[in-house]
Length: 227
Image (cartoon, rainbow, N blue to C red; front, side, top):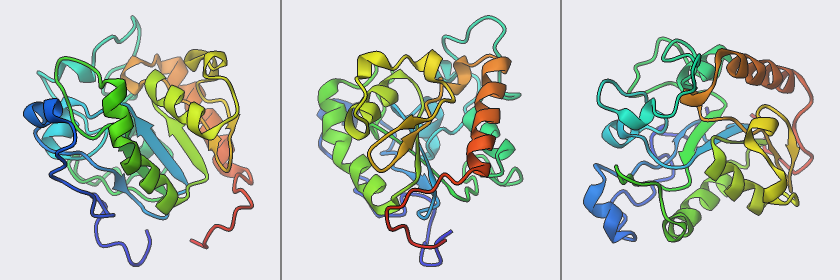
């Protein structure tokens, strides 16, 4: 972690009372800004806070009984809390301290955030809400200057590919590109299926690909500061 970083939670001091989306102000528990290591090489981006993230204020937090959307749409044969949530994936990569508490994970060389920072319990974010939140995400990417962007899910892949690659979004199929390296402008993208929707085989395939990436010379020549 950067020696000057005071907190992993909202380390850039972004507006925690953001008034920009009136409909979401009525439904959110709190604004969920990014969390993690501000000197990270790896930045994970999801679509919106889950019920658990909305409750504790940490992106990709795991929930319990009643957090329906955390486990929704899981295909037959997919694993549950024993291997497909992002926290466990980060632990297996050595990017999260497995002994750290669920509400305050200790991330090293990883940063987690969302396209939108507030949760509506009954619907995904609108295009307008994603656009309204875009300055938050752009600021995090600019200040962290990661090497690898990991779009988690279809919406994140579409938004990040449209902004940071020259590829047509229509040409990028999430299932086909799960774990593949997609060359971008200053970054590489490594798409990931929603963790709760992955089968064991898909999780293992993504992990093996990312371990190979971490062992490679993945850093770009773009004037990165030393870690």
